[in-house]
Amino acid sequence: MKRQDEVSSVFAQIVVKELVTLENVMNEMMYGVRAEQTRTLMKSHMYELLESPIVATTLKMGMGKQELNEFKDIIIDKSIDATMVPIRSPELNDSRASKIFGLFESRLKALTPYEFQNLLRPAFKEDEMTLVVLGAITGVLAGWVHLVAVFF
Image (cartoon, rainbow, N blue to C red; front, side, top):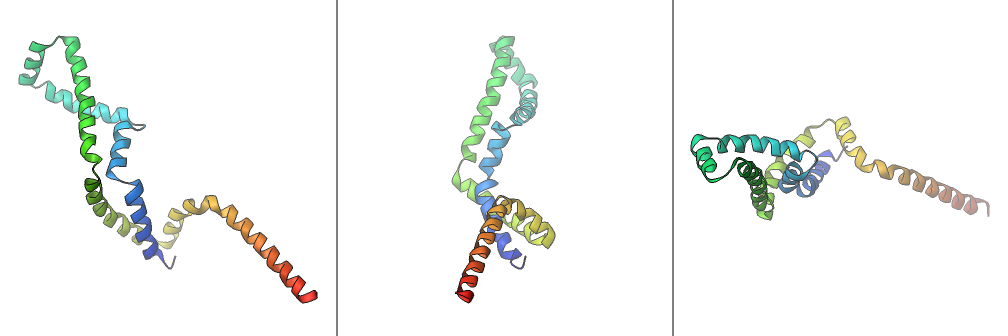
């Protein structure tokens, strides 16, 4: 806990560079578990645009009702694909990462020691048993060496 500021900076750097990148967030929104909710939201906005009088009249003149509905769905898919192209740019991700880093680091440093410990504990929890076993083995070996050295 004495090194909370230093650990906060390193932890924030790792999280921002590898986990909470703009690309990862957008991939999760567009292709993840709740992608259908994102697509529904996008469809509602796109349909609103496509239903404006001029656009709707033009589209209805050129397409049948079935084709128009398929066209609307295709536009959503193409929009998502077009959106993801610039999102995958390393330069864009790096520029956004620097802004997210400052916010994330300051929030980590502002945590109480107890909150900070609880934040980091899951990262080390899977190694706890290994550390306990290694500590026990080292203790037994050190005790045995001490016993041998004193009595033999």
